[in-house]
Amino acid sequence: MVPFYTAEIINRIVIEGTTVIDQPDDLVEVGKGRSAVVFKFPGEQKVLKVFFPAFLHLAEQEAAIYRELDNSAYYPQLFEEGEGYLILEYLEGITFYDCLVSGVKITEEMLRLVDEALNYARGKGLNPSDTHLQNVMLLHNGGVRVIDVVRFRQAKICTHWEDLKYAYYKYYLKPYFPKKYPKWVMETIIWLYRNRWIKIKNRK
Image 1 (cartoon, rainbow, N blue to C red):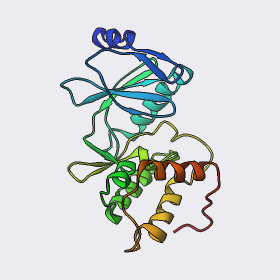
Image 2 (cartoon, rainbow, N blue to C red; image 1 turned 180 degrees about the vertical axis):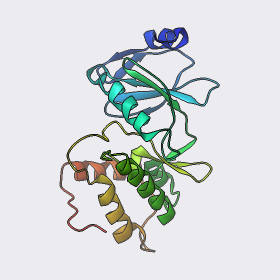
Image 3 (cartoon, rainbow, N blue to C red; image 1 turned 45 degrees about the vertical axis):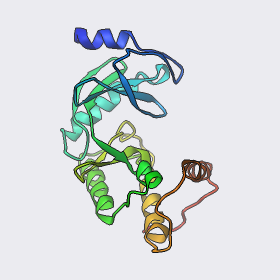
Image 4 (spheres, rainbow, N blue to C red; image 1 turned 135 degrees about the vertical axis):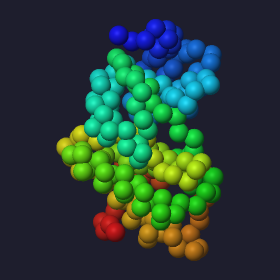
């Protein structure tokens, strides 16, 4: 049974396609992806992840993956699950994408921590996938978290993270290479990569 407080909030959120039409005034949207939107609860260190109508089935899949990860410190904690939604730990920090937009340096230690997180998931029999700049966070305390695990059971091999590491070591670490980029530059690079205009042949 869905707790009354959660059910009341869910019933007040109206989504059409991938657009939020209406929501409770005290909920703050803090993230949005291909399959869901994330709101922060007022006065709590928790977020509500609501899946778009076409992706409601992913809530159950992602909850099961979080249970397999067993509240590992590499990932957000799962507090509650229901039809089409999850309640997760709120993480204070910025994504690696935002690091590049704001000029916050991405260190080799940060990459090492992401590798540890993904290897932990592999040790649980999962296949880490869709690990990209907006799915990895640098916390205010210096920690690193992987924040989207819904595709960790897909069968195909995903090279997003290995491709990012290749670009990091080949380009980003060079002293003359910029460490800060406008959003339009970031979005252009992402579009070119997704449409295979940028291809990574050799990986570290």
